Length: 197
Image 1 (cartoon, rainbow, N blue to C red):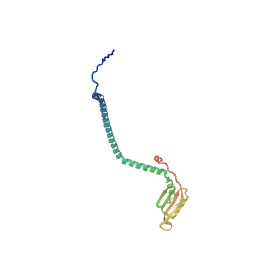
Image 2: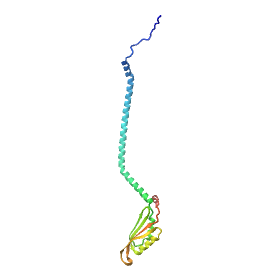
Image 3: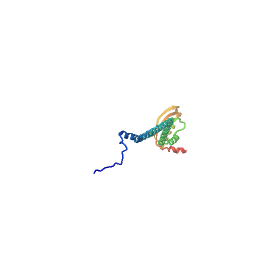
Image 4: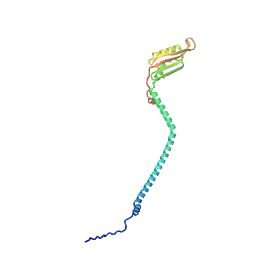
């Protein structure tokens, strides 16, 4: 006996062809991909627009600040020059000696009646040389030389030049130059300490 089978499912139509499947894919899945791509393109365009605008704003800001800096560059150069001068002066002041004491002592030894008096101090790292020149009578030159030699502040006192200028006898005047090495070398107080005086 032969078995008979009954198929209760009926076919509704022929299986879809390749073109039909392609059409169905394009109307469903491809449409979603296209919409998503358009959203990405619009987002990239908006981001590029925002980036360009930000870049332009930054360039404008840089140009404005550059103009301000150019206008202030001359003042800055002047301020830097003044700061350099102040620093140099402060360094020289602090490293220099207090020659005020030397001048006070020297003033006691200079005789009265000296014409064309000139006092110079040449200071180097190793030595300080005092030079006194003027025109006065011979006895006063000798007295000044001896006073400088007796002082504890000076050494190597030498009359480096002497020349008769005017007159004769006891009233003769001589142009002289005396040189000596300074032993007294007191450092100055800091510059800031003079601000309270």
